[in-house]
Image (cartoon, rainbow, N blue to C red):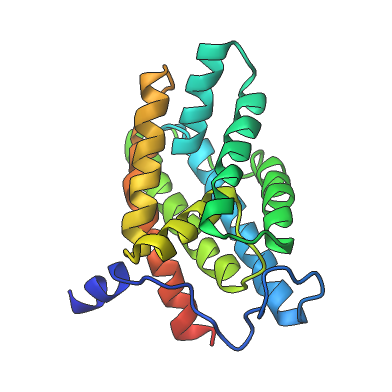
Length: 220
């Protein structure tokens, strides 16, 4: 129980021996780059497992879907617009983009496309829920690696870390508030919410904290 409380109270992205000293670093050390890529691959695999579980997409996709219904735009366009809006909020939060920000956009998309045909598509509700839970955990662990590399977060993770620094609240709490807000707004605009969506919304904050804890403990 004490361990769980410790994990949920994590506030800072750790600065380990392999973390980059500056997010705006396009020539990182080999092990820094390796952990960044590992984290993003895990992130992409987790996202794909959520998709193939067929119990609802991630909260921000629900938001993009809802906006696409309202404004008669493709979901790709609204996803791009949402990302731009999120990046706009980086400026007052003093967030810095970097190599990780760029690779977040490129590598995760590639991993989703490559893994989508080969990952399981469970048929029963029980296994779909189990796969959704595993998906959330894998995204959380992947986040722990790529955020600790300190080479720049993705748009939504940058919003999370920026708000954490501003409020000094635990990462799990900030991430949960962001994800639940995205679900509520998306659902209001007509986005489709499933069990997997809710598991992601309420579980990804603690999962990211768990990922950070695992990286701090075992990958110093």
